[in-house]
Length: 313
Image (tube, rainbow, N blue to C red; front, side, top):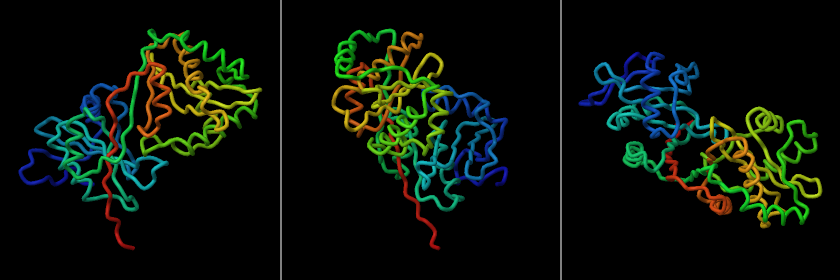
């Protein structure tokens, strides 16, 4: 790719590929673009040797004022490219058109993900003709204010019915890991999902490695058999909850609520101060579970879709 790219007539920007020297400016722009929801560091931005991962910047005078990245959306959505934009919204259209002029083959659609209060991104995707295709929710819980005692009677009733809750031991026997993986696959099959809430394909060993190295997993056993699972990912003073699933024959008993409460009680005792979670708006059972636990919903996340015209073969 040339060092500079043609821009639209009368556009006061110069477009060019990202350089490592732009990392400070790009980290600042992307952090501002997500309203500080996450903090990005300069070392997270480096020139990629992967031809499918491209980042451009828009420069006005000596200053980088906007950036855009085009990359594969993920293994779970192999036909889609993801478009991410940050910075001066007036530069989004020329950045987008520069990508359109040299799209890689075999991809059928572009996807963009933004929260509904990220105004400049929302305005761009709407004006560019993207479809507001899917909505996802996020929610947070203040752990110092979380009272595990409220859920103790529920856990005791389930205990009397034969259900016991505990943290999964990384040294658990192979049969336990088989049951955990079967539950994971059942959750993937049963849960409503969209491109942003679909996990990448994982083998049994992938899942085990992730749980042992990065997560705290909690299970419910009935007569010794694992029948429910939830996972927490620690990150600083926060834990992120995901992968809550109950075996089909044991649903509608309140197991998901009780097990998540058990996991959150552990997180509070360990000194974590915040808990986060999320999923598609179509997953009404999990929305109800999180409402019972006291999670406070955040602004919706929108996944925008633009279909591409594939070249004739």
